[in-house]
Structures are given as structure tokens and as C-alpha cells.
Image (tube, rainbow, N blue to C red; front, side):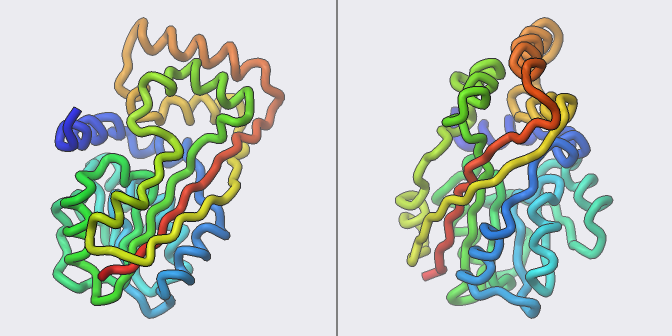
Amino acid sequence: MDRSSRGSWAERGFANGDLYDSARPSYPLDAIEFLVSSLGVDSTSHVLDLGAGSGIFTRQLIPFVGRVTAVEPSESMRETLARTTPGVAVLAGKDIEIPLDDSSVAAVFVAQAFHWFDVENSLVEMHRVLVPGGGLGLIWNERDESVEWVSELGRAMQWDVRQPYRVGTDYSAQIERGPFHNIERRRFAHEQVLDHDGLYRRVMSTSYVSLMEGAELDALMNRVEAVVSRLPEPVSLPYVTDVYRADAV
């Protein structure tokens, strides 16, 4: 599947902004503090959250910066973000078409979205909107499948065969092909506390699952229920949060 097809598929798979917003985890505070401090942004900085989704990361950025602009291709995600996150400019756009002027932001952040991007072209476009010496911050929450029940859940939801990207991929070399340097990667521990219904919604918010219907969806959720029903409530879903920072050349 080429990048343009993947982008279209991602938009269709994230067409329920309210579900995504209620089901997905926040990001660990120490990871956000690392990005903010290492990129040198502060209460005077204008930053971009690109591929902002429903605004989960956007809302966590607000206390650390002066102004956040959120750019997101999905109409449903934008509607949810605008409703839940007042005071943030929410714009339609995507990785290779950012509706901002040249040299207009101090940093570009991408949360849970870079794997959908047209990497080389998006890096050039992100560099365009950065001020000289501005920074790039990437972050993902990835379920920690070193935990047995989480691995079993992944197999039940067909993550092992349907995943849109390989968990744990090192993007350093790809970032280095763009106009960025001083690349650093770090990992942080995180968790999301859910009841069973929340864990089912978390599964349903997965891009390819959200596109399923009828018997296919029923079969997948039956397998998921066989795993989840054995877990005591509340459930602590562990994550490894993968983070990158880089400076514009």
C-alpha cells in the first residue's frame, strides 16, 4: 500500500472522533516535559500539533506553550477537537499540506500519527513551517506486548497481522534523511486504567477495527471478549511511549 493510499485509509479509519477521544490514552508527563525542555519551547512559543486527531496531545501541550495550532485531516476528529479544546486554532490539513506560513512555529509535534505520513515529503513540509533552528517532536503510545495478556489481546484483535506499522520501529534514520539533525530517541513507561467497557472501546478505536462490520467485527470482538472477560476490573493497560526529538538544520 503506497503512502497516499495509507493516508486515505487512515482518514476513513478515524472517522469517529468522539470514540477515539474517549478511548485513547493520554501521554506520560515526563515524556512531554522531555520534549518541551529539549526543544526549548516555553510560554511564549507558538507550536504546531500535526495530525492532532481529537486533541488528546494538544490539550496536554497547552500548559507548556504560548499557543497551539492543531492541523488534522479528519473532519470528525477536528469537530471533536474544536468542541473539547477551546482556544486552539483547528485547521484542515495534512502532513504534506500544512496550512501555515513559512517559519511560523517554534516546534512541530506529531502524536500517534507519523507512521501514516509520507515521510520524506512531510519532513520537508514540517521544516518549511519551522523557524530557523526550530524543533520536531514525535511521540507514540504502544501497548506493551511483553506483558502476556496484552500480547494475547493483540492476537485476538489481529494486531499481529493487521497492524498499520511495526511497533518498535526506529525512525531515526528516516528523520535523518530530512532536514533535521541532533536526533534523540527515548522511551517512557505509561499506563491507562480502564474498565472492561473502556477496553472494548480502546480496541474499537483502532483504525482497521473501526472499518469492520457485521460478522467480521463480531468475530473479532468475541475473541477480544474472551481475553478481557478474564481480567479483574479496573484493568491497567501498560504502554511503552516512544519519543523522538530533532532540530531543524
